[in-house]
Length: 316
Image (cartoon, rainbow, N blue to C red):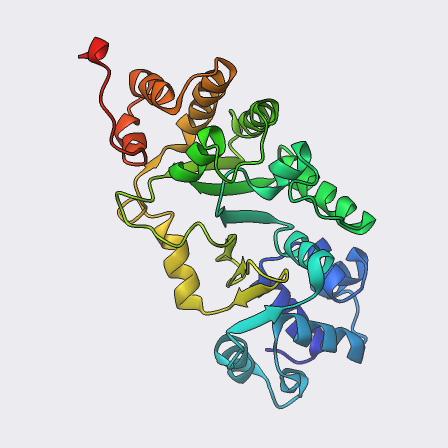
């Protein structure tokens, strides 16, 4: 069934779910070479460098290339071999950006610790933390935004309602000016409005006790069986390959019966529009809440995230 290395490479490619371009880049070959292997147009044994690259990227042992590793044995090794379930990516700020760009090259499913996501923030406020960044980092940030904003790029993003309200109305720990807030809200509205390749959700982190989602950027990829989160120190990234944990995390945010209370993706852009209007008109958080309550069915979700206050008597 797997008589040679080409058969094994094709099997690994089919199993990976990656595009031809992405897989070809992993083995440092052009698309034509990989296509020729897939179509069985060549029989020459691939080089040791190709095998090493595949083993390193997918974390397969070198023994998969031995002739004795064949048929069911080969399939079992791909499926059941022990893998390091946790890997620390410690490549500095620029290395972290490159890692994220690579891992989210095909699509992304992200739970953000705060609103807005870094790509939208960096587009409007290039250096919010007053730190000096390299020219490479600037270019990588631009590539990240260009990738995410591409109309055809599939992106699913979750934010807590609390983080959206903090961004919009809090005067504590908020470095955005009024104009920057308006620009970011417009940017995200235009990115997600009427685009079926992109999904934006705002969830209630209080009514369902979803704690800890305000500490790390979490990216989940169930197709390739990995997830990673950014540590809030030293640009460290933690990659996890525990299949059960990844499935559970993904299911929690995609299952209708398990997902936290949230605003539907079809209504998220409208919420951004209402909040932008409130900021433009210098309305307070409570005034904005009343606008949301009047124009949408999501008043109770927002009320869960606002400290108790005396209701306006003119609305009673």
